[in-house]
Image 1 (cartoon, rainbow, N blue to C red):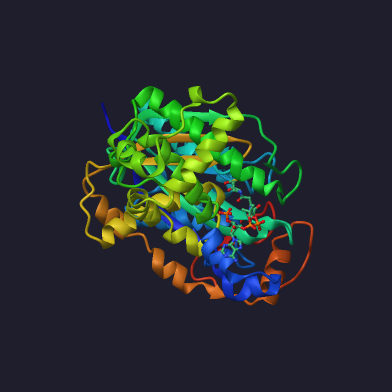
Image 2 (cartoon, protein in one colour):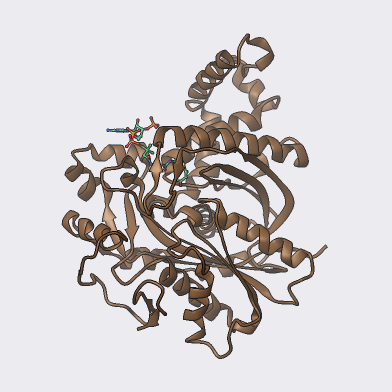
Length: 440
Ligand code: CAA
């Protein structure tokens, strides 16, 4: 069977940086440690005044096409995943294709373009669509370009304001990929939820605390569903587990839930039993509430155990380094978690070919997807080529007053004229809603 998966990745971060503990927290009258220790965040990326989801997506895609030496003829499909779309008819992929056609010979006339929406999950769903298209033999030898691009902004003074971010991830999906091969097995947890939504509005209505619980419930269901096809999982099966990361503190909660689930009925549970008891079994409780409470207590104890802490440090912590410095990229978030892990492995000279990652994607509304990926030979060259640190370091640090202006500039209901903080460097720039973006 032909392997299909991710052949190349590129990112484009919003070009502004907001320091959360030192700039944002004091102005909000909050303890900086809520950010660094609680949410696990150092800073957020924001788009400069000439950036939006189209320019960030097009700039990431151009970097990817240039690095891989591709022309439009090599691409048979462009899917954009976003929850920040501004056009209810034309997909964002057409705007991005329009940008790219300004700089390449040839065009995307014979490529299938679309826009995928299921909150933050849509990036992974677009990869799934590309995988199915290639596996079905409909790609005529061409690759799929998947672009996850978002400006994750919340209403001013909404608790979500702490977890904002902006950036794009472009990924090339091909046969015989150079980074990871996707497995055929997937698990889903899906239910109609209203904890986070944007009905005819730019900024989300969020019940933040509930959104955390819904994320965890759907992720647990997806893991169970995944195991129904893959067989039981064990923590040692996976080198890294990138989760959707709205903020690293969310992943701390998902990780302990995953570890608890994967260690049930294993030698690890036996080892832990003498210290924190056996995991509660539902059959031993009279009500679901009592069982849930007991599981919660067990997980609190588990967090303090050496076995868990070592596993977390090796398998989860490395997935968080980019997110910690850019905030939430919504659809791109789980994909920068994967990239963080691979960059970490590269720095440590780990030989990962043949090893597996378990990827936990999530979108509010709500659905989680769990699938496994196998890292393939040659991955190092393609991960090393992504300029992560340089891009993050080049961002312009904004003050709180500047942050307020930037937020207003990107608020579709306000019309404010603000000078750019940075200068475009041969990149696509925003020139107006629904207009062709230019390269400057
Ligand atoms: N020192 C150390 N830790 C501190 C602290 C301090 N001084 N002050 C607070 N903390 C801790 C808190 O204990 C808490 O940690 P735990 O959850 O582990 O207890 C954490 O910092 C956050 O503090 P609060 O709960 O008080 O923060 P908040 O009321 O401002 O709300 C939030 C946090 C609900 C996540 C809010 O930022 C929010 O609504 N965010 C947007 C929604 C979101 O991201 N939801 C995630 C799931 S949905 C999803 O994943 C989809 C998506 O991308 C949006």
